[in-house]
Image (cartoon, rainbow, N blue to C red; front, top):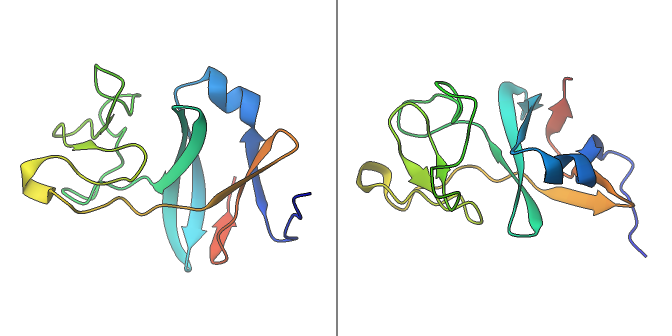
Length: 123
């Protein structure tokens, strides 16, 4: 039996996430405002701070999309940098090996939650 920590922050039902390409949530992380990117990929939910390390913009800043045309990589819509969806590791030469900042998730009874100690959900 999974025990829910009382400070978990509800994101959305898992079924909802499985039916849409992604969702974003406004958060503070360690008292800094940020955007969280949450998506379903290859049977699991993933979340990263929605912030490309190249130009410090959200991955979906130019288009309302986060995946490349193949659906296999996350893609920053500003310059086309691609990232492994499971690890957040950049696959593009300029930032090769750098990673998006992962956010811990927990799933319980069909709901998805942020499980980060220093995260506050704003919306």
